[in-house]
Length: 574
Image 1: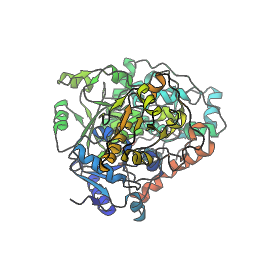
Image 2 (image 1 turned 90 degrees about the horizontal axis):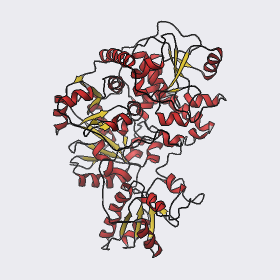
Image 3 (image 1 turned 45 degrees about the vertical axis):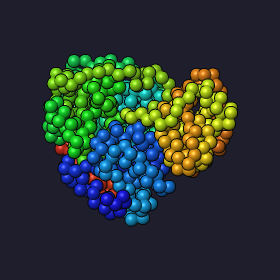
Image 4 (image 1 turned 90 degrees about the vertical axis):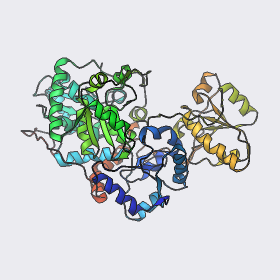
C-alpha cells in the first residue's frame, strides 16, 4: 500500500464516506500543533497534535482498523506520526502528499480558527432559519423599562463565572430543556441567549425554537463581544447555584425533546444493540454521556466518556474524529441527549440516543462507576481563555523514560544536565525552572541534537504525558546515533518542582519567537482580554464562515423548522 495519498484522492474518499450513510469510515487528522492548525486547515480535519498523539488516539480513534489519513504543515511531522501510529497497531495509515500546502495549491479551502465546523454550523443556522437577534442597546432599554425578560448564558458555568452580561443566569446549553421551566415561568417572557461571541447563543436560541417552546426567543447579537463593543460593562465573578431541575421542569423538557426526536427521526437504541456495536471490530462507535461533569463523576456507565452537551456541540472534534462513525448519546432522561443528537445529526454525524438512559442501560447489565473529581472546583478563578478551553481526553498514559523526583532533577541539572519543558509555551513563559528551555515534540531542535550525543536531559511537563511522548523521540535519536540514551522525566513536572520549594521564574520578554510558539494561536488571541480589534476580527471571521462553506462545497442537513407565530418588536430577523 502506497503511504501517500493525493489531495484529489483524499477528497474522493471523504465524499464517499459522507454519502455512504455509515457503510464506510475514515479519520482525517491534522497532526500539526494547534497554533499551526488554527492558521489554516481543511474543514473536516481533526487536530491531533503530534506532541500528544499516543495519549489521545485511543479516545479519538478507538478502532485500530479504521483508515487514518494524516496531514501536516510541513517538517515531515505526518511521517513521524504515521510511524508512531503503526507502532500502536493502526493498520491503514496514509499521508496527504504535500500536506496543507498541496491542499491550498490545488484550490481547496483552508479554514482559520478552531472548532470550525461547529462555528460554521451556528452561522448557517442563523442564516437558514432566521434566528432572531437582539442588539445590546435594545436589551439595555428593555431592562430599563422593566420588560418581562430572562437572559440565559448557554456556556459552561466556568465561563459564566469569569464574565457575563449583567443579570444573565447560567444555563449550559446541553441543559436548556431540562432547566427551562425553572428559569422561565411565563410563556410571555422574552428569553435572550447571551454567549461569549455569536454561535453558542445562536445554537441555544435555535434549540429552543426548534423544540417549539412557547416563548419569544432571541440571541444577543455578538454576545459578550458585542456588549463590550457597544461600550457596556460585563459582570464578573457571580455564579448562580445549580440546583437539580424540578419534576415539572424535567417533564416539560422531556415533552419538548420528544418533539425534536420526532422531527429529526432520532433513533432510540436499546442497550443490547449498542453493546453489539461496541464489540464490532469493523466499525467505530462512540458512546458519550452528555450530562454535566459533576453528575457524571457521581455515577456513570463504566467506560463511557463525559462530553457535556454544550461542549460537544461547541467542540465536536474533541470527542469525535472518525467520519462515518456511529454516535450514541446517553443521559438520565433522554432529554439533553435528544437535544444534542438533533444538532449532531444536522452536522452530519449518525447519532442516536441510548434507550432508557443510564438507568435503562444499568438494568440491562451495564456496570456503573464513579470517578474521582475531574472537573474544576465550582468557585475556582480562571482566566477567560482557560475557562473556555476544551481539552482532548487523555486515555492512554505512556511511560517511555525513567522518572526522577524534582529534588533529583535539581541535582542532575546542577551537575550539567539540561532542563526541557514540554508544557504549553504559554505555561513556560509564565514560569519554569531557571535555565530550562521550552521545546515541543514536533520541533525538538537542540534537544534532539543533545540526545543524539548521549547528553543528559531532564524533561518536565505538568501532565507527565507530553514529556514522556517527547522522550520517545529523544531516546530513538540516541539509538540511531549509537549513543546511550540519558533522558529522564520529572515525576509531577513543574508542580512537583514548586511543591519541593524549588525556584520558578518567568521567561524574559521575547525569549520565544512567534515562529517557535507553534502551539499558540495568535490570530484574535486577545479577544477575551479586552482587545476590541481582536473582537471585531473574530466576529467578522464568524460571519464570513457561510461563504467559506459555499466555496468548500460543504453543507449541513435541513430541519423541519418552527417559525415564531409573530414578529418580536425591536428584534432583528435575518
